Each structure stands twice: as C-alpha cells, then as structure tokens.
Length: 509
Image (tube, rainbow, N blue to C red; front, side, top):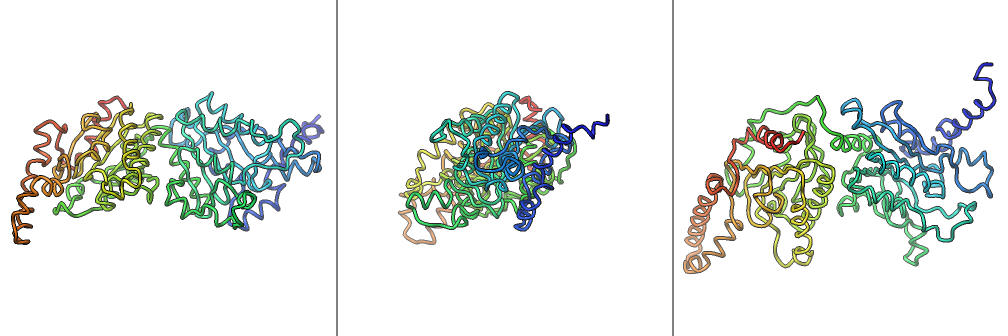
C-alpha cells in the first residue's frame, strides 16, 4: 500500500498544515498588511535552512471547553509560541558552535499572549538550552499573560509557572538575544528585558503593562502606542540596537550571535597608516573615534550597542583577523570623553556579559577621568561608577588597553579593568598623556596661588598655558612608558598587530 494513502499519515500531514501560514491565510495577510512578517517567516529567515527541529507544534490554547478543537488547531497554532533547536550561521562559523535554540512568539495567535501550554513549551526549550549550553534567540512580540484559558482548573493566580525563572537562569550560561517588533507588554516585556542583548524595530512599543492593565490599575486610559515607544526605550538603554524592520532585526541578531560563536575564516582590513593622523595636532580638539575603531577592526565587523545611551563610552563588538573581540572606547566628542554614571553602568554590564562568555576585551582609552560635580552626584555617581571597578576586578578574560590620547585619573583606571596593570598589555600612541587628573584641572588646583598672584588676565592665561605645557611634558607617552606605568609606546599603524600579538600571548584563539 502506498504510504500516501494511509489515513493516519494523511491526518498527520493535515494537522501539520493547520499550523503553517498557508492554512492561516487571513492571519498572514493581516500581518503583511501592517508591513510585518509572520512568526514562521521570521523563523525561516533566522535559522539555517533545514536545521530547525520544532518542539510542541501541535499545542493549542487551553480553551477546548469554549471553542471548537479544529478551530483551535489553526487559530491558536502552537499555542502562540514556536520553539525548537537549530543551527545559525553554520556557513561562517564551525558547525558545532552554530547550534542554538529559538523562541518565536506569534502575535497572530491571541495577540501573542502567554497561555498554559505556551509556558510549558517555553520552559521546555529553556531547560534544554541550559542542559545543552545552547545560545538562545527569542522574538518577544506579545501581550503578556492570557486570562482566557478556561480549560485550566488546577491553578488560581497561575504564578507558579517557571518561564521567567528558566529564562533568567540562563544569564551567564549562554548568550540570550531578544528581538522585538510591534507590541511587547507585561510578561513578554519582562522576557525582553531579561535578555543579555535587546534588538527592537522602529515599530516597537515595549512596556511592563499594556493598556488594559494600566487602566485597570486606575492609572488612566492610554493608547498602546503611548506605552514605551522606541525613541523612549532607545534613549533609556532598554534597547541595545534599533532595527529598521524585522528583516534588519534578524540580520542583526545573527551578526550579534556570531561574535559568541567564534572565529570566521574570511576577513579583510583597511590600511592602517591613516591611524597616524587620527588624533588632531591640537590636543584640545575632539575627533570621531568610531573611525579609529572601524580602521582597526576587520572591515564591516564593528557592531555598536546602546549608541545614544551612556554616550561617552562606546560598547560593541569587532573582529580581528576573524576573531571576535569585545570593545569599549571613550568618545571624546561626548563630555570630552569623561566617564559619567550612565556610561559606567552601561560599560560594566557589557563587560560582565562578555566575561561570562569568554570574549577578550579591547579598551581604546581617551578620557579626562570620571564626570564630577554636583549634577553628577545627583545621578548616584559614587555607586554607579563603582560598578565599573567591581566588574573590572572580576574579569578573567584578557584585556588589552590602547591609550589613544588622555589617560587621567580614576576614570582611565576604570576603563582598563581598574588599574593600568590589569591589562595583559597596555600601550599608548605617541599622543598619549597621563596624570592623576586632567592637566588643566591639575594646574588650576596645584598652582592656584601662582595664578592668582598675576593680576593681568592675559599674563595669567599665558602662565596657565606654560604650566599646562610643562605638565604635559612630564606626563607624555614616552615618560609614562619610561616609568613603567604603561607597557609600551607604539606606532598607531601597528595597533592592530599589537593587539593580536597580545591576545595570542594571552592564549586566546
């Protein structure tokens, strides 16, 4: 007998088809009309072709007591969450390192809400990720908890679920990337916020409660688009990278994951000679440090996180000869490169995650120190800046520090793991300058009486500049190296090679 004629095989195929987009044409067309993709379209774009192994595809919402079962099979396909294992980026990284787990919340099923079997599926895949050490990518669009699962008679509040625990417990064990498009409220937002890295499209609204819960709590009536719009969530650091749409977000997720999957074989790099002129001749001028980063890094490999949050420190990833490296760098065009409270916490969290997953760190340092003053203290500077020292002291991965220009005070120490002696190699460009505090501040503080004794403003300014120049000579790059406060002065054009040699000596692959 031909297998195609067996009734059980036909029933199986029909059952599978009810979960797919072709059988859910109305839901698919509604997504497309909004310019969005279906859950399975996002899945297909993310994973390597033919690699996805699905879990719980036949689950439906626990609503058999109120709806027809056949209707549930399509309308609540997979109970609104697609879960499984796969490979991602297998064509560019070692196959064994391309293994991953995936979760895609399906907004076309009951607004992406979390139901009884939905949670069971999420728990199952998180537990597998823990056991098998699988990095996870989760698409989080959805409306949070679902009150309509009438089949469930064994719970009251339903707060004895494990999903949030199992997802959060993966922190520091495997990398977790969350991707969002559209509405992401309540439980879905909690999952998004727990991720190590968070990508969201410009058409994202992310909040710890949706409109109904806010109104029910007596907090007024709000449109969903008023809750956590992307411009708010980007500025406050909730979102690491803003994507144009779901396709762009998926590409970013694959690129971000790749840094934790290891080296790639194909790479290219720009000529390095331009680095010799990257720093302005006038030490008071700023410069675009991202150009320095992009020159040192393999071409096209720099991926920045939280670009407009904590702006005086840049965080992100690069590759050097195909090898992934975590990067922090001072941006002297923001606060003159001074490290403020926001930037401190941003960098500390980033370093903590990268350390947990074994990524070496490159610090490109150019800072006058920590941002100080009454306004800084209002922001909790003492506590928040301290986190950068705490995390730095616990780093077990190699750190390479390259001083581009200024290396002053506690802020410079915090940028290098807490001490200039913490990096496996600390080198400076010839433009480097060092001191316990910025030269101008040191002169005003240390030579106050001498300056106040000069009555003529022009003469006083001339004396000030002379004293600054004298202190610069004392703390310039070659003198700091002569006193062994740093390991070397290097030709800027050799920076890339210097970093690679230092990492190789430290045993990184």
